[in-house]
Amino acid sequence: ATTITALASPTAGPCMGSDNVRNVSAGVQLANGATGTIVGTCAIDFGLPLYELTLCFERGRLSMRDLDGDLELIDYTTGRHTVHALSRNVSRWDQYRASFGKAINAYLDAVEADAPPPVPGLAGLHELQFEAALQRSIAEGRPVAVADEFPIGVG
Image 1 (spheres, rainbow, N blue to C red):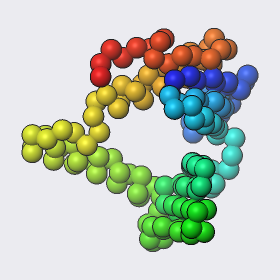
Image 2: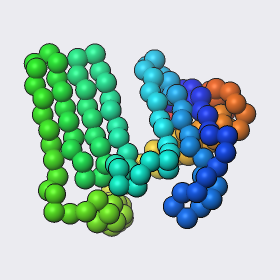
Image 3: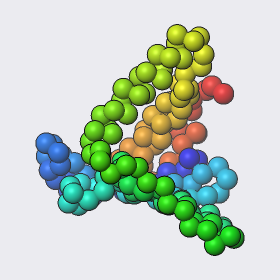
Image 4: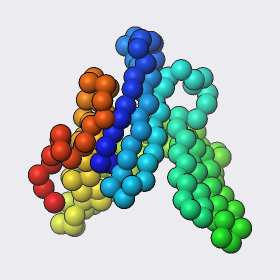
């Protein structure tokens, strides 16, 4: 992201054991000019999906919902609509818990093979950079130029 503009709800409320959780929304501009929106809230029923992700392109769309939801691909040039689904016999929490073991095992496999990690450290720095810019935008009530205000200083 090149620029992040974020807002938080004026009052905090209870969520998952904490009494100090705010709803957050952010507009994000990427280096190629694309824009996106992120919304985080605990103000919905816990039985609803944990997340929804939709990526829209000129001639298609990709949508995902929840940890065990379907992945939907729509290609408007061909008129093709494809849905990929996981087996329904596993709960989303089982899959979520299992993802941590898979991530650690993938990292350990890379260490043992003297290979690069599956997710490079720079990706982790970019995530922290994004989060810091989001927090600053909320705190100061203004757009944040991500790389200018939180330079990483490596490739």
